[in-house]
Amino acid sequence: MSPEARALESLLAFWADAGVEAAYAEAPQDRMAQGLEALRPRPIALAQPARPLAPAQEPAPQAAEALELARSLAAEAADLAALAAAIAAFEGCPLKFAGARQAVFSRGDPDAPVMVIGEGPGADEDAQGEPFVGRAGKLLDRMLGAAGLTGRVFITNTVFWRPPGNRDPTPAEQQVCAPFLERAIALVRPKALLLVGGSAAKSVLQRKEGVLSLRGRWFEWRSADGALALPAMPTLHPAFLLRQPAAKKKAWEDLLTLMDRVDRQARPS
Ligand code: URA
Image (tube, rainbow, N blue to C red):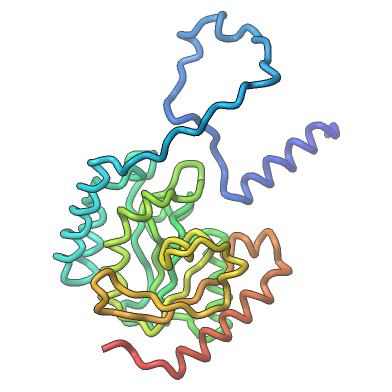
């Protein structure tokens, strides 16, 4: 194999490892219809004049409506099965129409003392319909098992449809899914939340710091109506640990801190 082919193979393996197995634009492009003109090389503009940033957008009216609908559907869900059905039927999250095969809600024990919240489904989760079932999920399961939590966790995500190309979910996508996540927390009533990765930690706790500064610390999570308060701890995402195995020590310390609290903590009434 030539050095170029080896380099290309290694680059593709790197992307596959990161969960990126497709590269596509927002809309399909018909290159045949564009004809030869589209294929001709174009001069490259070396210096672009600076453009002012677009002013911050007000939330679209549809987004506010979708959030309202999510709130009322979530509030009506009397149990986790009803909540799963409400999520599957919900059409207010744009991710549902961005290539996801199905809604991915949860797996695990509905009476679990610990609720694990990740950022969003990846390719394996999208195919199988359950969160954290790919390589990162297998590592998560091994780590939770080592901490004595096998069968004692309820696992879900901040969004319930796979973001295209495994990108991070946007704050708007997380916001419209948040009423369902909050209802899941209220139905399970765990002793503590384990927030896996920076995207989940920032969204659930409404913090701006990166996960390296948030991890291993206790925060108080409160429901929107203030009726439920739970201890919540961010930790490193297992996909990050697959790329940076040396960081597993930190994640293990976080799990020990979690278990220490869970053993002492009473379930919320
Ligand atoms: N990463 C996540 O954050 N959630 C999943 O369900 C899978 C991978």
